[in-house]
Image (tube, rainbow, N blue to C red; front, top):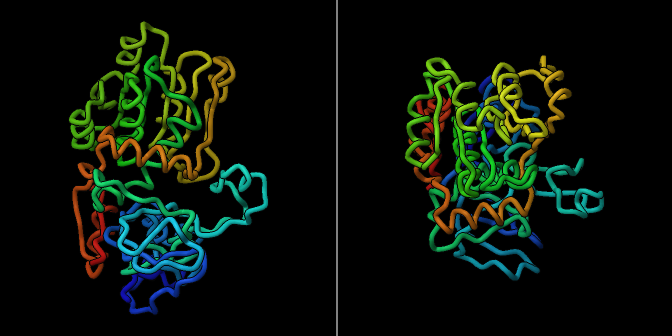
Length: 343
C-alpha cells in the first residue's frame, strides 16, 4: 500500500513509499483511510522538530471504513464508517489508564508518531479506540473529530463552560475556531481574538455564530472584553495561539477566580508567564493535553446534532500522491484546514 513515511530525523526526510499492508491481530481492526487532516504536529515532524520514532507513517486525524476485524472484536464490522482515537497501546495498569485518562499514561503509544498512522491507504487500530460515525456525519467532516475531541477536552472537561460564561478564545486557527464553537454550543458568549492576517478565519467564525471577533491590531481587545463583562473580565480564557504575548494579555483580561486553559503549545518550554496576575486574581491556570475517550463521545454527539461545523473548516484537499502540496499549504498558512485524501 502507499503511505507517507517520515524516514529519518531532520527537515523533510519524508517520502511516499509502498509498504506492506498492516496485519490484523486480536483486539484490532484494519481500516481503509478516506481522509487525513494535516495538523501542527505533522508540520513539526516534517521540520524535524518532533521526537518521533523512525520510520513511521504520519497521520492521526482521519476517517475511514472498516476493512478487516480481528478476533474478539464484536462491536465493529466490515464496512462500518469510523474514526479513531490516537491511542494505539497503553500500559493498562497505571492510575491514568484505570481512570481512562489514556492521554496521560507514561507508556502510551500513539498512531502517526510512534506507530504507523493514517496518511496511508490502510491503518491498524486498537478496537477500543474506534468510534462509529452516525449517518449525520460525513467521512470528510469526521476527519476533524480528533481536533474537535481535543477542544471538547479543553472546554468541557478541563473546565466546565456554561451559558453563564463570557469566554475569550485567543487564536482563530482550526483549534481556536473549534474551541469557540464548543463553548458557543453550551450557550456561552464567545469572543475570538486574532490578528489582521487572520481576517478570513475571523470572518468564518462569524458564520458559525461566534458572538464577537476581534482583530487585536486594529481594535482594543480590552475594551471589547470590558464592555461585554461590565468591567469584570471574562470567566474563562482558552489560549490556542501558543503566543506568550497573547497569553499574558489574556490573563490580564480575566475575572478573578477565572479559569485559563492552555491549549496551544509554545515554541519553547520556558516562557515569561505573568505569574503575578495569576496570584493576585487567584486564577486557575490549567494545562490541557490531547483528549481522552469521553472527549470523543461528546465530540461525535455534537457533530451528530449539527452543533459544530467541521467540514466548513476544510478549505483545501490533496491526494496522497500530492502530499507535499498539502504540507506547503499548511506551512504557508493560506488555508484553514487541509486534508489528504487516501483513495
